[in-house]
Image (cartoon, rainbow, N blue to C red):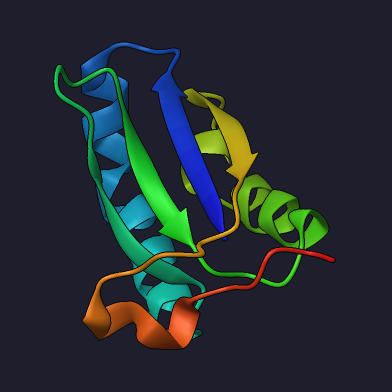
Length: 99
């Protein structure tokens, strides 16, 4: 599992202009089963995405395709974690620690 943390590097006017393209990108990855949740940070200086993808290389490829990255208006920090505890609704995403 991965936390994809966005940090805006451009004024909000540029971010807002790209939001429709970013929303399409998000919907594509929800449909593919890559994303579980996403939203703006408070204060609004970026966002957070919870991703369930098989490896870091896949997470990096997905991030590189975000219109925000393509247009140079944000940077990502990718954090991998092992989801050993989940809410019941997320039982299918629960992971085991490596041996």
